[in-house]
Image (cartoon, rainbow, N blue to C red):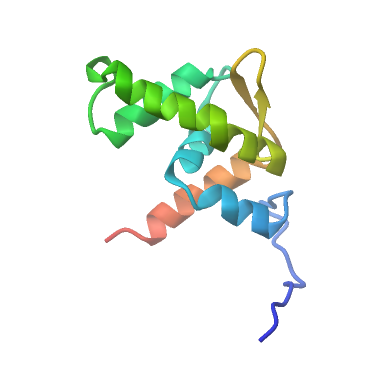
Length: 123
């Protein structure tokens, strides 16, 4: 069996990256959270801000009840793995010296995909 490339793409909300990169970006909870938080941000979120929000979601608690270890665990994984992978794919732009993240043209369409999947996959 061979893979085929779709010949039609909906121009209403195109994602300007290869499908493999989009799937890789979406196949991890922390990367999906980075996309959603970056797409919704009014200012460039810092890695610390992202780590705190993601840790709170993962641990099902408010940010003021997180332990330093819970924050650190997420922060390190974002720095070492997830942000670089998303940046290389063009999903976000990671400003490493500032430890901040900015959206790209792909961020909002991928956030829309995540939201659509949440709607379609509700139990």
